[in-house]
Image (tube, rainbow, N blue to C red; front, side):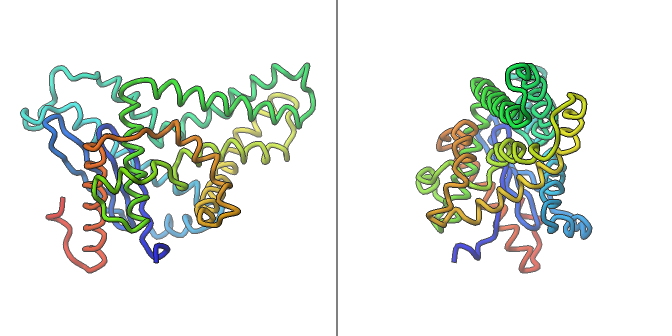
Length: 314
C-alpha cells in the first residue's frame, strides 16, 4: 500500500521548507510576525528533459540540474521574504539582521547550487593533498584511498563548522522537519505535529546521502584511471565528475528501494549517518511550517489530477 503513494521531495530553506511533486512545488516560510506565507511554482512540461530523466546514469545529472533551477527560485523567495518586515507591505527593510551577505552565504551553504559549485572544490583539493603523500604512498591504490579519506574529512569538517552558526543550525532543523513530514506521510500517519515529531529525521533519499555516495563511488571509479602524472589525475577527476554523479544517483535510488529489505538496508546507513550532521531536531513551530507546505502541495497535486483549478489554493 505504501509503495503506491506518490513520491515527494523537499528542500530546507531560510525559515521554511519547499516540497515538490509531479505537477507543483510549494514553499512555506515563517514570517517575522509568525504568520506562514506560501510560494508556488507549477512544473512546466519539458518532454525532452523528462525523457532524459528516465535514462539510467544520465537521469541523476539532469535531475540535479532541474532541481537546481527550481530550487533557486524558492531559495530566492525565502531569502527575500526573510528580509522583509510584514508591516512594510513588501518594501525592503532598511536594516535586516542577519545581513544580506549572511543570508546569501547561508542559502549557498545548504542549497543544491552550493553542492554543484562545491563539488568542483571537494574533488580537486583532496587530489593535491593526496599528492603530497606520494613519497610515502606511491601506488595508485594507496593514492586513491588517501584521496578518498581526505575528501571525506573535508566534507565532515565543512558540515560540522557551518552547523555551528545559528543560521545554518536553523536550516538544518528545517531539514529535519522536512524529513519527518515525509517519513510520517510514507508511514501513513496523520500529519499532526505530535506524529511528525515522533518520526525519524533521517531519510534514505536525502541529498546528504547522495553527497556521501559521491565520495564512495569516486574511490571505485578512480581505480580505472591513472593517478600519475598530476595533471592527468586532475583532468581525470574533472572529466569524471558527471560519471561519479550519475552512478551515485543510481546508488541512492537503489538504497532507497532496498531500505525495507532487512539484510540489505544497511547499504544506505553511511548516508543516514551523515544526516546526523546535516539535520537537527526541529521545534514544533518549524514542524508546523513543514506540514503546512506539504499539505498545500498535496492539495494542489490532487486538484491537478482531478482537472480542478489550483489558483486559489496559494
